[in-house]
Image 1 (cartoon, rainbow, N blue to C red):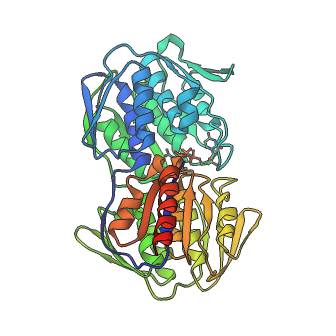
Image 2 (cartoon, protein in one colour):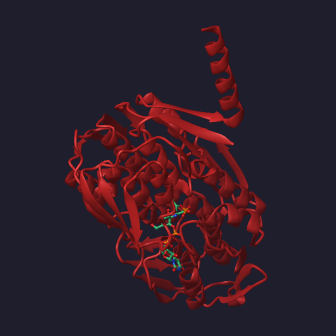
Image 3 (cartoon, rainbow, N blue to C red):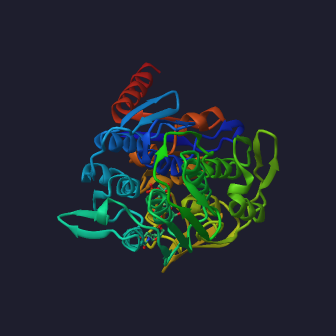
Length: 437
Ligand SMILES: CC(=O)N[C@H]1[C@@H](OP(=O)(O)OP(=O)(O)OC[C@H]2O[C@@H](n3ccc(=O)[nH]c3=O)[C@H](O)[C@@H]2O)O[C@H](CO)[C@@H](O)[C@@H]1O
Ligand SMILES: C=C(OP(=O)(O)O)C(=O)O
């Protein structure tokens, strides 16, 4: 088992570069399946385990995929198969995003049911509602969802989402690109990653208008072509480093961070006393000596992002006063609270809210990551805890952060990542030193 070991107390300073966004690249790679002609080249792709997983899904579906030097090249011009099995969907829920492309391209898709995960039950009823409105018959059975378009082609429809789901907006948008007629999708997600996907689809020859607003209009076309695209910077990775700078009272330039993608986060951190300076290369973050308590409610974009909830919890534990975080997007995204408590945090859950009295006298402890962002949040807490923090279950971290501990170490953190065997050897060596003393 691997561990990240952090010794708290160092102030961070320097420059850190943001990778391409995980949540933009996964749907964009799924969208490359729509091209029956030509190759797609996706640039600035982060080397994350989720990217390896989506590439494997595409290969399983008979597309040719190469990943080298942060570029993914996809040739999906061969006949595709229609089934995404459970072994991939279980590893990564975003695998369901191939459903819209497959249905559009082949008129049929069979994708394993994703099931729940650590942050909530995460149903996909809104995705399926959209496919059905476009004429598909949808059947669920034997652990699979099977969708089929009559006569092999979906037709344009007017669809209203009950909730602005990111995945449903993306899946329906992809499905509608090759449908016969126009689709009008209302109450959609407005995240920057939706805009990035729409831009890529339009480069492929699609006619998508309105991405980034509450209504998206997609005029179906007969064929789509491979295209080249640069992925937008990862606003959640950028936000995580903003918190790292703020929590340590540091001075960090986050290269590539886009201020307009993080408006709600920056506003909240400014309320806490953190200073942001827009520079040509990115955003400089200056952490104050003392942080002020604030209340936060997660919401769909442009509201406060749920993917920054646990990192902000780490920051608020360090702030003076009572803070409340209310999670409205996922019903069970507080699994990390127990781990914070192991670090002596003064924190409690009340319904969908978490109440913190800060600053907590944080102490290093052995803690386990419960999901991707919780992994990052526990490491951030370790940066200011007294003594040594050991974070395990790093498979979660590797889904969404490239070289996280190396990037923090380059900014001055006392941090390393080791296997259990290495830890035993280091421990043994300390006994040898003791004996020789
Ligand atoms: C790969 C990716 O981009 N993941 C992001 C995406 O996930 P994802 O696309 O899964 O998130 P959604 O926006 O779809 O989900 C938000 C909420 O809607 C519910 N829901 C969703 C679809 C549906 O058909 N029915 C339904 O009830 C979910 O259970 C959840 O409670 O957006 C989330 C919300 O910003 C982020 O936390 C994830 O990092
Ligand atoms: C919840 C997240 O991702 P996913 O939807 O891929 O689980 C995340 O990025 O924080």
